Length: 233
Image (cartoon, helix red, strand yellow):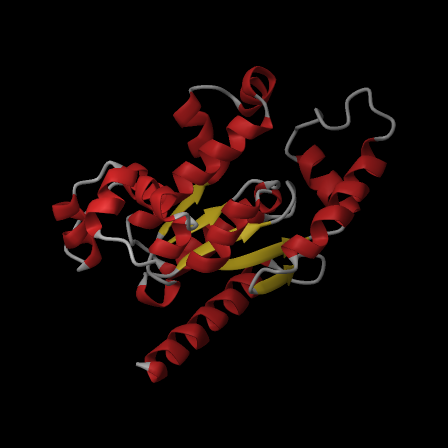
């Protein structure tokens, strides 16, 4: 852009000396301060982060509630010997509210901001892990772009009927309570989000694949990905 470090420092509020260290790969910057630098440069924050090939493998499972993300995620994490995290649980802990209370008090925008901030902090740890994300994570362009760039994304796919039965099987009747159109709404949501979910690096259809097979398939793809990176190096 032809700017001096002093100009960027003035725009971002980050000292020119620290910016020099950051540019050289020596600075250890916080997520919030890096966001200030990104805004000063008028670029997406993710563009300042290392590509996923330089990072530890993080698997992000996406899909509607009831798809089987938690079940597959726990088994996959155990198989890989890494942590398993549920993004919605982390959001509830951060907000000190249940998801129902959070949406009621603050709305979906607040939920999406928390999801993005928490994911940034997790990815900054440069630690392998498996993350089960919320069903709506793909509807936030910046968050979905971050996941596709920095993680290995897997769409855990299921039919509307399977989603319905599994949520009921978990004892959660809220989506269906006193709503005769609940199934139609579920079909509509899945139809709208399916093209976004399909952008994931891998799709696992739980209608035809058992948990153990899903774990094997994802692990095999991860191994292929690591071997490909190794050959490039």
